[in-house]
Image (cartoon, rainbow, N blue to C red; front, top):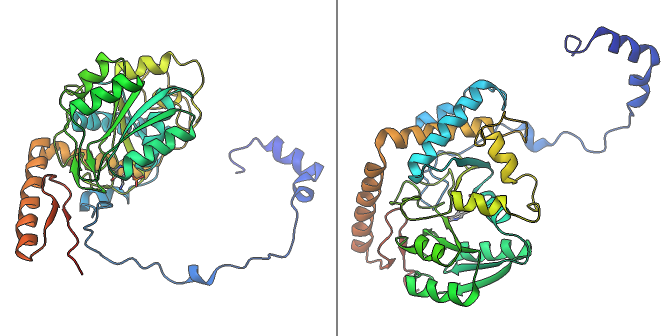
Length: 347
Ligand code: PMP
């Protein structure tokens, strides 16, 4: 501290005596918690739920790297490498590609808050929890939400979507690629073109599916795609890749109101993530170590190759199907190569 401030500041403050007087002193009413005096214990557990997943040794090692500043050049370099990795994983050339500091829900909010304005119409495919959540977030921010409700395990056809687009004239359609609460996979070919014909953006959730099943952001005309770090990417939870198409960017640029969230404001985030060709300015302190882990998981994906990652997930899922059926369990949906739902046996 002494080395950081000019000595005149110290001299002045000491002579004035304000340091002493400004600090109040009371007896503590909360003591150091006994729970924190015990050593931290974490079991080594095989994780088989839909995230978080076990972490590869190389990603664990990233968690032990030295701390650096979120605005150091070396960190900007890591962030640029992460953007390259997301573009590969998403199969997109979008300039507006970055990571939201937070879990998948943070990316859900960032997507909606930036491209939807209060009073605008949003069409949501609700065939499980994730559509419900998006509908709830959109409603809270003042959008007019139209839900296309389907039974868990069903997906949306182009005909379903066309009907909704014609009826509600939304600015945004939401679909979940891998519905982790029902085990269904949403086909995506043709949905982007259809949305664009109706002047609507396509928002897709790939939190559970990225790396586990094919998705092609640019080819499939997806305007906003987000994911999470803790599923097929095998990173710790807390960082969420997201990308915005040129169409989504234009929708953002033509907003009449500011986004309801400062933390998720795309203008600030795009600048901090080096997506706007301007000098990067402080916005918030990113989860530096979490980003290093994400960088490593994207590097592993790039080295293995997307096709190989998809093939591997399909292969182990087929093996699991086979073994579950031998145990007499029925599959609820037999389709999704990264998540297996079996029907609960009676009794
Ligand atoms: N979407 C899907 C498809 C998910 O499976 C999840 C997590 N289970 C989320 C969104 C939300 O992600 P998070 O828990 O990381 O906020």
